[in-house]
Length: 166
Image (cartoon, one colour):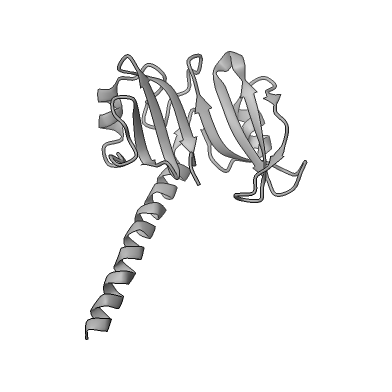
């Protein structure tokens, strides 16, 4: 009997974080920043964002075995993380970073310049108290998959959608 209870508790200990992680990943994949959503193809990104980006060098990451490349639209305050399975291969959108010049808003209307109160109202259900360090940053979802909002002077100064940690 004791072994059964211990086994059940061990399963619950592992299942609860897994369920929470699944919720964070679902949130991250559904969230939008302007016309952008994670896992979009290169062609979809090119249609969604006007202009040609500055493209960084492709680098293989040992953590996931993928080839990563940054696409930057400096005048728009937008940086996209793109990834492919092989060097020079078809890429998909894996992260979105917005800074000062970016005018894009999240699916819930949050953007550069939004207040902490607006963010708390929009993302109350996804707020991650453990990962957040208020008043400096607010994490919706988790650092392993979510929306990270940085604050300066009580307003959003940068936004990141994706996995910020492995």
